[in-house]
Image (tube, rainbow, N blue to C red):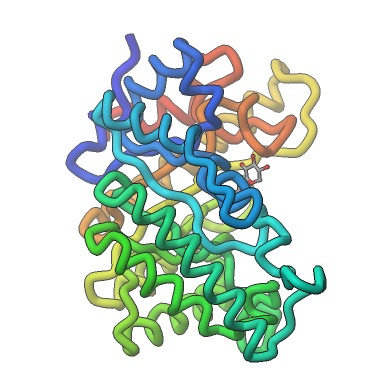
Length: 329
Ligand code: XIL
């Protein structure tokens, strides 16, 4: 039996994994999850398209199964995600009478705000006390825009106001859940500055936001581990703000075909070294970094098809990356 990953880090932070629903029904997956992880993120099953595929048509059966699984096995659940520009059905942004795309007229704004409110209140309310952290808003920053706001349907119709509203309504629905802003490429110096300003401004306005989620979809080439530390340092300047690493994977290359040659093994060793270096940084900041989640259980489950970005290989064998987190020192 392998040493347990979450046991190893229990004095530092939670160790999480994102899993598709099928993993919860596979006994081998379940064993690995229970042994190594004390937090779970539903990979797609709590996104708007899963929970409310058509207006008012809430479907909670799969999400409920995650909740039951976590309760039964004493695992915490990270909710992902309430507001995003992807995996959100187009009905959200469509006028029910005309069938046309909503505009930024006051009438249309009200339609979308009401939908946002209803979605958040229904979902967060249903799982009140059962989800320890929610990614309330996902990927709202685009560092190529002068004001930093991604031109999503949410923004185009509502302006930046949708962000604070989402946090306010989520907090009303579950005052004890930790509410997060979540994004990728947070190691980019320009992008992290925009995110920092966004969170600072929300806090200054009294908006209930408790943490920043750093996705950490990275590769061997980028970013340098020092930039990950810079990002942690920056967000640590906001008093009381928690940091979660929400979606870690380390891509070694796209579309590898041969998985047993020396070059592949070399890349997997480099991956292990990088992950170890990252964890050495995270441990230093254990007062602010409270949860660290991998975006997938094993390589063949990863959204990065043909890549080898996770801790276990397709046969559930622990990779160098896994051992780099277990070894003492
Ligand atoms: C990905 C899932 O892993 C895929 O299965 C799905 O097809 C697309 O979404 N950032 C996020 C996650 O916040 O929700 C994404 O998950 C990966 C990028």
